[in-house]
Image 1 (cartoon, one colour):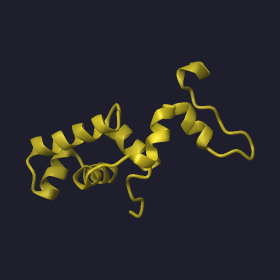
Image 2 (image 1 turned 90 degrees about the horizontal axis):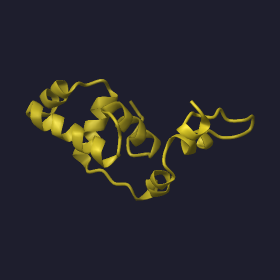
Image 3 (image 1 turned 180 degrees about the vertical axis):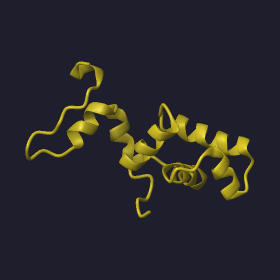
Length: 102
C-alpha cells in the first residue's frame, strides 16, 4: 500500500501523531471536528460500544428493543461517516466526542 492510499506514516522524532491522523482521515473531517455534535443517545450508544456491549446488551441495559439499539448504532456510523461501529468509536474518541474516564 502506498502513502497515497492512506497508509499511516510513522511520526519522525519530535513530531506529534497529528500527522498520522491527517494521513488517515479526510481533512474536512478534522477541520469540522470543533463543530461536531452528537445527541446524548448517540454518544451513549458509542460509549457502550467502546465498553464492548453488543446491540443486545445495549438494548437490555437501556430498556430498548434490539431494533432500536441497532438503529442507534447505524445512525452513529452514518453521522461519523464510519465503516463500522468500531470505526465510529475510534473517530468519536479522536474527535473528542466521548469521555475516556472509564
